[in-house]
Length: 226
Image 1 (cartoon, rainbow, N blue to C red):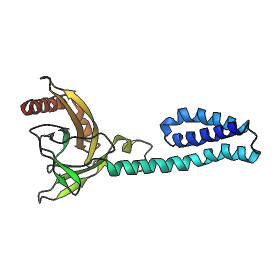
Image 2: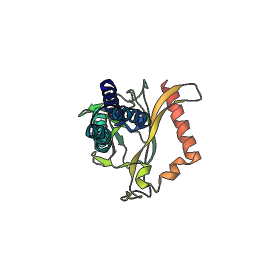
Image 3: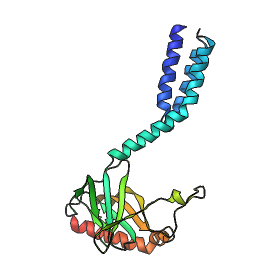
């Protein structure tokens, strides 16, 4: 019975640690139940059985919250730090194509890469865009040469469940995503998509004709570079 009790304890400890990642709950919960069963069929005292069963459940939420907060903080601190700098009054889609031999050189200031987006929105970049936590800042150059930071925007900010929605008319920067593509000439490339717009004006940058024109410009610049 002592062996069974110890096995149950080991299972509970391991499943508790694994369950701190919510994506693993589907596996850790059944394993936790098996561990609890092992504890309850052992010759342990009733109080011991109860504590080993109840305490992990009580402690799970604060422990999981602390784990996710720490993981996010560490991930953001160690992520690639990118500053996207747009021209004055820039609005519309932007794309950054990485590993382009004729592209903008990598420039680092205060530990952050400085990516200057051209007025056409297509930046060919010699650097590499890493897939990890996001540590981005967005700016527009002012006439005096200073940088004015743009607020970050995401669709979830405007969900009905959100109590404090941003102003839908204020220009912000949206990270649309990353991916890989191949153009008509067979050139492969990796990219990051951005949008500078207000919530109210964003729809026009998803229109078919706008996107076809933007894609044609992107393909042309990639072909010229490669």
